[in-house]
Length: 170
Image 1: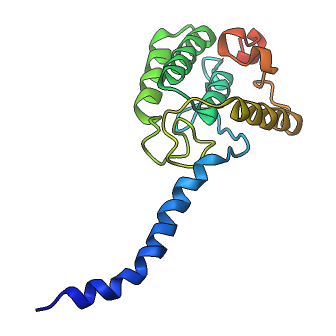
Image 2 (image 1 turned 180 degrees about the horizontal axis):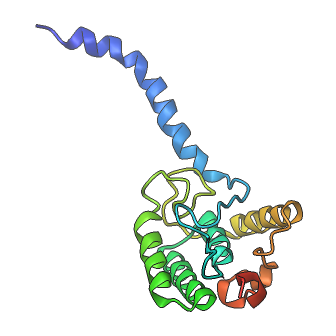
Image 3 (image 1 turned 120 degrees about the vertical axis):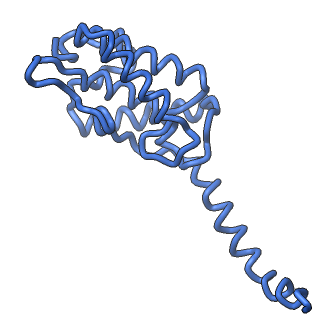
């Protein structure tokens, strides 16, 4: 049996397959506008206990949306844990949330809550250039202008530890 004619015919699909593959790679070059769903796949608050940690998640989402290095991700996850602990007084909840985002937020899975979710899938761990940082800041200013969210601190205070205590609900 001669398979060579099959390979000759299938060569016409190579450019199309290459274009599809490259289109997926090209999507990593443009940062999309910031979005947040609060604490992805986790409650934002405990109404019965009067504890609210949604702002911790929103600030954490800013870091995950931007992406960057593995070290930046570790720092963002540690800040989430510290923020949840401060907002609730519950170190176990903070540690559990940090463990959850360390496990589920990997940039290697094409989820809507992965590290660097503002970029197309495939960016993984890469530091932002000065131009990308400026683009991120512009998009955050635009988001703040259109979404008066008490959790969104001004740029200079956009870390959980610098967030006003009133924003954490406690």
